[in-house]
Length: 120
Image (cartoon, rainbow, N blue to C red; front, side, top):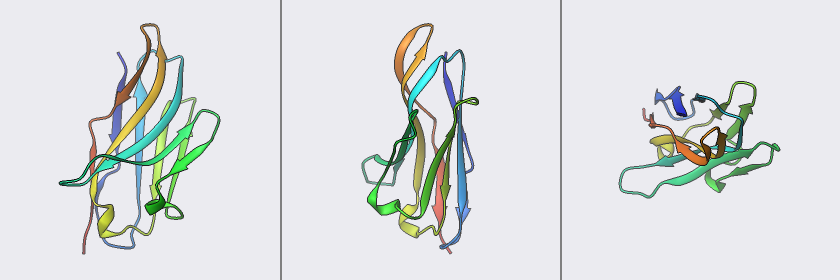
């Protein structure tokens, strides 16, 4: 059984920074894509950033130049460094792992979500 445990959310003032972490635990052979999505109240869940095992990245236009995604494959952990935060970044942030290979097969997993609030 794979579990994704997120940490690092919280309340920050506009212009501030936060770093989110998501660690995948369990018997994992490989993870193809690790990424972050977010969902603000009344809005659909959207991709924030994703990173393949081959280090190819994909960012939402709204976060380019401010957010940086990275991963530690040895620890099955993905990070999201968020700088120059804006009130519109306020949302629940979800970790997502695609094509996770375990003894049970191949599937995707989601974290439980962590709240990020940007407010003065």
